[in-house]
Image 1 (cartoon, rainbow, N blue to C red):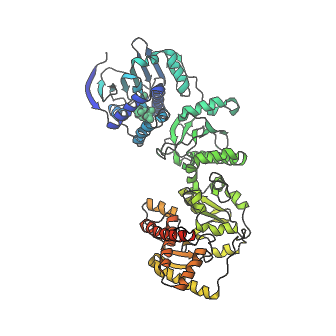
Image 2: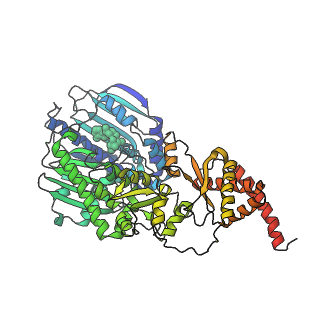
Image 3: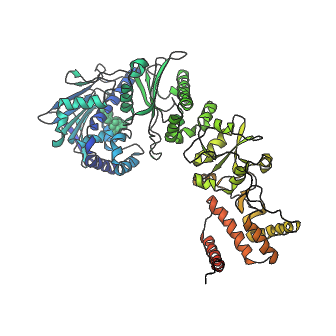
Length: 636
Ligand code: ADP
Ligand code: MG
């Protein structure tokens, strides 16, 4: 028995208790993943000690082999996992094991309790892997000795119910960590060799340190990214991908590249077939693993690829970086930045080829990863490739799911067209019914439809595609549009207004302005309307309702824009209104219609704050029209 001193009891933090409760009670079918998590922690600890050693740090037990040992006792139902890694000090045990430090853990708990199927996939990604041991353990004892020479060895002990006990071990133990698990009665299979071997082969075969059961090495690992492409089977790639990402799905694409000049590196990259962005939580959890000569230097390095390509998973390994490079100075390293720009163009070229040669595949990619990819509007270096890879829905598409590229759009330019038009809205139907679109339909001009608020940011940041500027339909120059030939012939011919009626119409407009007061700066005749009686436009550059909403959400002060009401003089409602006006300039119907038209436009834009007046007015009008209806139909 080892001697123990200074034994102290601690209680788990509330979120740990909650997590333990979920793990123990709901993840019954995938309990074997606890072994994957413990081996992965051992491997991390070994990576860390190798890193310290390469740096030349003074290390306790520097001569130990870097390895993981699994031992079991099927009589006593005990399983132990021992590593010669970095170990932990007393303080480290308390912070690393007793609490959940990382942000996003609360969301994890929430997500897991809502969607239990996810749990075994994402548990490792969220850095709460250690606790999974309590799915199979009655009791767990950790014995650990830090690589720091004067730190004492520590024992941590818990049954995973509410508290844990920490004491100092006075006996000498070697550097590293041992996890001793007293298995639950129904988990005794994990004290049997075949079950352990099977589980390790399934989940841990790519661990780059030897894993021993007794004297036998279980994992026959190789750095497959360093092997020639032709010698790696699809199954091997997939297996490695699953090991790397904990994703159960096959990857969508595999990019395996080996570059020799000017800088040597191997990259094995994957595009997941399902986005990892669970509601945009855990956004920080991305990056590629960076190796130098097969030695892991950094997990999830975030500078090898720009953020907008962060859906890509994988590893990069180079001969040309020093082994002892520190993570802090990586970014300033010239070799590193050359590697990273080369990795970036590798991914972009892959996507470009895919878009060209596998249209359906590219659309699948787009639907899954576009939200992250669109963030690339700030990559000025790869601006051109990025623009070619963008996809939009547009007025020429048959439905909301069809996609076009900007190159497609440009091939359909009308004579004299110089701009790429776009319009935002919550969905295709609402954009299609936007009165601003009417003149574009009439002229047969294609308009990009933007359903995702970020789309507008994208086009206003990149500003141009080739020589063509992006232009919001709301701000299109009507004089320029007029010059473009109509492609639709109006099907209902309307009579020209007489000179006299034109005068009356002009004074009706003034009357309408009077009714609306400060709400609008002007009421004028429209050149853009075809089917609707009226619409609201803004003076100068108009910000779309979608953009205004984003800015408001970001707590930006959005100046309410001065609006102009435009009237379609050919619309029968306006013609009738003119008749009423000519009979009695003060007829109350004029006021009702004017206010209604104004509020309808606001409603359509999503800017009507209070619908009460509008509803009241509609009801009054409905009542009147029901009288009319009964009369016409001879109903009494
Ligand atoms: P993660 O591995 O994602 O950080 P875990 O819950 O698996 O989350 O482990 C929590 C922490 O406990 C680790 O980050 C590490 O600091 C520490 N730890 C766990 N196992 C070991 C080990 N075998 N050796 C050293 N430290 C360990
Ligand atoms: Mg872990």
